[in-house]
Image 1 (cartoon, rainbow, N blue to C red):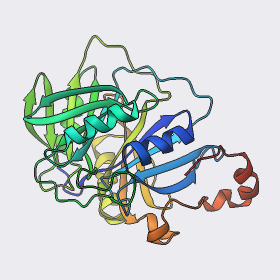
Image 2 (cartoon, rainbow, N blue to C red):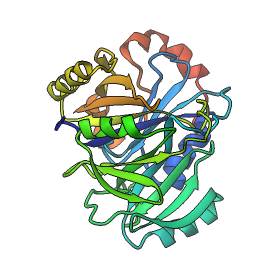
Image 3 (cartoon, helix red, strand yellow):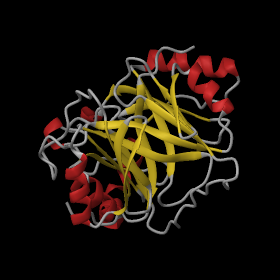
Image 4 (cartoon, rainbow, N blue to C red):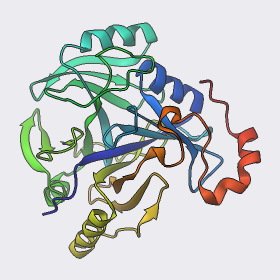
Length: 310
């Protein structure tokens, strides 16, 4: 069993409209945009990162906004819901805020002994806020949500699967422990994790397979401290029979990827070097930052990337 994984690092999804996506996460949810860069493989498309003040691993939601992408079809083999942590007693604030902002799909419920508020982002992607007990992480209060109700980071995510058996074994291998079962959903946690340390498995054998598109999660990333820890995890996964990519330099972290038996794309990402690598911490996410291999296209990109109204 691995002991290097701390919980989630980031979650990366697909969107259609960069400006609408930016507005939802910075204004409606009050997160900080910590990086404005481009997709490594398709530099004509942004890669936008939102999180806490520093973009701490376990707080970062990221998006590829493809202007002409079709809406994704929800199904199995994907992340079904991404869950943010908020302080106890704050859901009344968020329910009122969502009503004012016209947020869709707002539903109050209780699960695993916690109050939660489910909602949809601009592309129909599924999220929830949960009143997580004892979450001491500092929120970003320098933006649209300046009070103590602000989001602390991720609590975790729900994976939607046709069959959960092999994914359960994988999570246990990764250091997660089965903590509870509620309404047929199995909860796994990393003991002593980074706060973003819950994975729920929802088994829906009669549901169709999901199709990737706007509103879909592209991949979910798990955090390790550094490259040495990542190297050990990669070798252990290879030894277990997983097909794992070589280490890829993503500028703000190093990444490896592998497809799980349930169909979800997993990433293992390092906590180093962080989002202040190429920007002063006070100005994260303000300027367009380009991967080195795309810097020669800056003039073209600055005039052809969609406008984001900050």
